[in-house]
Image (cartoon, rainbow, N blue to C red; front, side, top):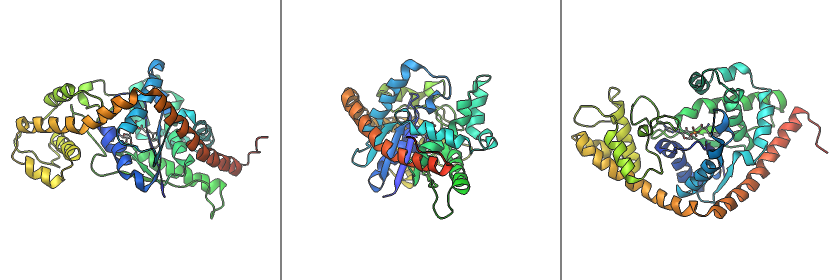
Length: 334
Ligand code: TYM
């Protein structure tokens, strides 16, 4: 089986973009692959964070992974900081990554502007940590949303550079992964602005639908979301980004095809569409929320999942780390 690896940062506010761009795609493909899915808690401290929240946000995310349908028969779930090979490989790869590759990353530039004076070295190094996450497991496929595409290209570049510098041409040490980015759902937009992506860090909670929002909250957010004054709803009109986003969300959450939704909504006004969309969203999230409630009450179960996950993840990660260190010429620890 091919190997899949992916992760989400434990920064709270897990939303429909995280679900439709990433987690749902992990679940749908999981029986075809050997899956390693983790909580990216080392990435979570690249911008200022709240120590009191970090562990509980991590457990919430693990419970959500399971509630969304990850099956432990196919998937290993673990926490990044529990497997020290992630930090160690990052150091080694730092030393072969040209600085200007990192300075050119779009997400670094965007986040650095927001942080002002307080940009950490960790924020610049974020993509090397991400490359280490992926390369440690020799992953074939990395299912993510569109915003991670550039980080995956960098991961391939780092792996290729490492192999070129330190491996025999016929025996590469690191596997070059392929991104797995679905067309629909890869870029879920904000409810407040169809030109900006839905984001955990948007200060307005009205800009996103969180997976754990109660029904009345979902209803309120959809009632308040940005639309336009045009009657008749259509996909793919560049003048109507909000319309395209809401129809796309409705399509993905209802399980209907794009053609079916286009036909259903072509004569509708917003007053008709919004209640329909609200009902569909609440119904799609209900089973996830119910399962989440049941799982999250059982902390010892979550701990056993993570203990097991760490053991399986470490077995593979440590093997790759040893190969990388050998290729770099390190002596074996005695
Ligand atoms: P994070 O936590 O920002 O996002 C987690 C996943 O959700 C996707 N995503 C979206 N997809 C569609 N529309 C949106 N509006 C939207 N917002 C977020 C992201 O593309 C991502 O797939 N760097 C990663 C975490 C990470 C990782 C990795 C991922 C660390 N190491 C190794 C894959 C492989 C991140 O910031 O995720």
